[in-house]
Image 1 (cartoon, rainbow, N blue to C red):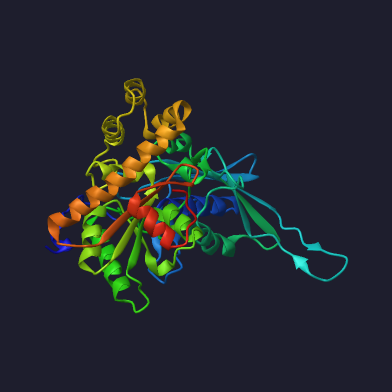
Image 2: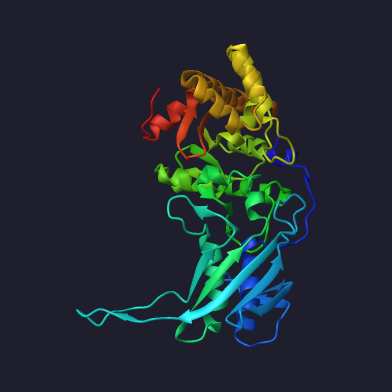
Length: 395
């Protein structure tokens, strides 16, 4: 059975924009007001990919602090029904500051500051390593394209971004798993929002998978990663880009498509809070469709023979992460044992899923990382594949 035959229409969406677009529109409106222009609620946003300019609605913009600063307000609308940032209020506070030229005494080299500086205000996520706002390259580029030309010569723009509900909303995400604290990231790799479970996005990923398998340099091994953070971590492990495929939440059809396309070895690589769902036979990992993570962990703990008192502790946890901390405090060896069972069940259930649709000998391994982005657990085939890829592991 073709993988495309099991693609179902999961949701209907209207076109909307990713969070960086709304931040840029708000910042541009505020900057224009700071420069003495009339507030424009319909901001024209230029993108770098030669597509048509975007027209983005901004709620308001006004001068503050005796005209020394200006604030812009917008409300994020991705057009996706299942999006925690939908309707979220965005504030951008802008201020012009002198752009000082620094000249060294030893030579004539002049060091210019950037035309703008982004400051993480309340509710905006910051990197635990650098303390800087978590801003994707696309977001920075979009700000640069739309702000640089309107900033007066001799000045740079200080841009403070505030998400009033950002800290609260971030608690519903796995941001801390990727080194982001205090709020939401301003991430995104394109202007138009796309749901990772949509039929169109799924079909695009299947098409990319098939093209990879046709490449003359393809070795027969493929690594599935979920999202930008998983992709970034996979690159840091030294995996070849041609072997890495960034996938959305709908893993089932993609695993089938890999088998159909002649993949010999497949490594499913991701955050444990996502991939544990596969151990319970849930092959669409978006929380809005199905969760059950704690229930799966408790079921596997029972099957693994963990003491009853620990299982009772697990049943009282509010999340998989809290359950993990409880176990580690009680017995670190039991944690290792249980998560090896989880990783093994991921491998077994994935093989079972594939064989519902196609007859395949594709080897499926699993590897899981934790909130500190440390590779912690892997199944039998995951260990074997990681070892072949040159990753140093402990058995």
